[in-house]
Length: 84
Image (tube, rainbow, N blue to C red):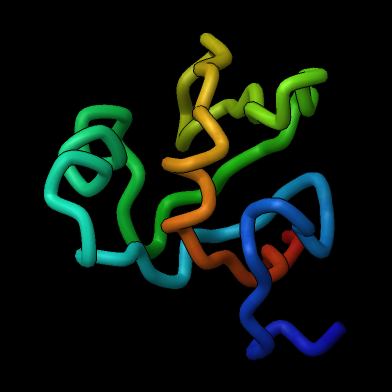
């Protein structure tokens, strides 16, 4: 996958990716995204996808995984992270 291609959070191209954009269609979901520190340019690391479709993510430099519900994750677009 080319780094410029955008993928849904539900099918991340790698276990490490960067937020490309977030949808502002739903104010409540946008607040939940911002509360978790998710914004364009932030690196996310997938830890686990739960049985109900939620994602456990490490966000930025945090060492604490956060559970991101399906409806919230669906509003986040990501791209493959450039490994350094």
